[in-house]
Length: 159
Image (cartoon, rainbow, N blue to C red; front, side, top):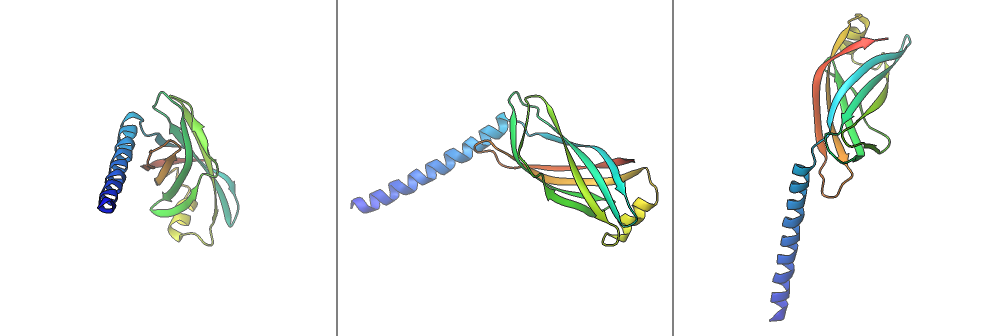
């Protein structure tokens, strides 16, 4: 008779802990505001006949009164409607309380393997290009879920 009682007690304990941790996650995400990401400078670093090297600056702002430890930042960047780059920031970093951290992503583009649409946009000499940034920021705090990021806009091309 104690066997079924022990089983029910275990199930209730697991259910209680699951609800408690889910509640902690929700409460923590309401107390800690998500970092805000904006795209800064986008520039052509090196132009060759076949290979182009670009730098995209991402500005990550921490609206909180405590530092935010960032463990991962996965991203996908689309330019002129074509996927341009996909990756992960290679190292963890921290954003000071109320501060902003700038991250530069270096992207190498081979014009022979790239979308002809994107190549034509770059070759046209346009001063601005439409972009879309999608990603997830992994915050290194207990019970904090990854924060989705989606930004669209135009980037001015500079040399």
